[in-house]
Length: 299
Ligand SMILES: O=C(O)CCC(=O)C(=O)O
Image 1 (cartoon, rainbow, N blue to C red):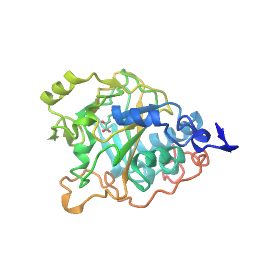
Image 2: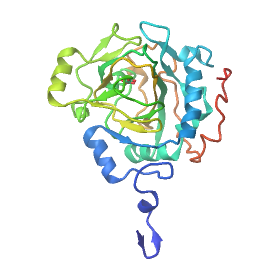
Image 3: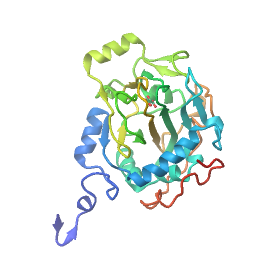
């Protein structure tokens, strides 16, 4: 819509943060606040996905530049999660700085944000294991972060492959972020990486209130998650790998408080000390990268 011959900002970028858009609409923001998550389809192109996927498969191998960032499944040598992935892939480092990602993040968190964590969550065909129900902020509060509301931190999940119930799609409990971090315990047994998970009685209580929703979608779709939403997932029962990129952003005034750090990690890249304001790159920055660049291992 034009007013006095001037194109309005909202109209130039409406309606969704797609490849050319950089802002969430008010309806999307309202949904995110109310539900604790928001799906946005087709944020990345197939060409961008191909580059990111090739880098991520290379990172999941023991030959990545920072192999100590990779954690295996409990019952196999298959990599479950790779942390600090932007350190080994120019394309991932570009993806976390794209205006179509950083724009909506800044809309929700305010002007100054930093990258808190990057990882790829892998669930390889037939061997990928599940994640018990949990909230992420129950973990991050033990990493010295004080605030985990919808206006403080956010996870951007990029689907690198198709995500279906058969290949272990994540499930979320809509609106559960309203309960805060929840009553979680430090679980040293059920998964390959020790973390705070929800005991059965608490899961039953939450499931009595809300029905879980699967995060189903195609490569290039994006899901925004609140730090306090309850989520989890089952095993990969299919032959198809399920890979998610996870970018976690935090407000620049919500840095970890050193004296409040209560847990140790199996890898230093869980809480890699990013602190700088994120410089936004041009929106075609991923396609300017060639797969495997910046990495000693070439796929
Ligand atoms: O990758 C998944 O299926 C679940 C991931 C998850 O729960 C997490 O990263 O906190």
